[in-house]
Image (cartoon, rainbow, N blue to C red):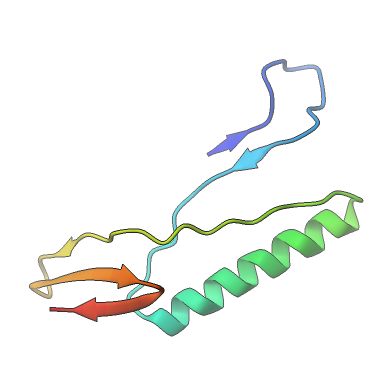
Length: 80
């Protein structure tokens, strides 16, 4: 979701972009997180802006096709 102010004809001082990252492998998550931060920083730099990138790691869902419940603990996927 993108939120960048309340008025349509004014460029806001700041904006917020939120979303999700879904994967099955801790190394894939690490790569996505690094590339996301790199792309955001490079894009902002090209336009004279700055960015703070925060990735919150949380509880993932139930995989019925694999019959496994998995959680993310510090970026490590644990199957049980």
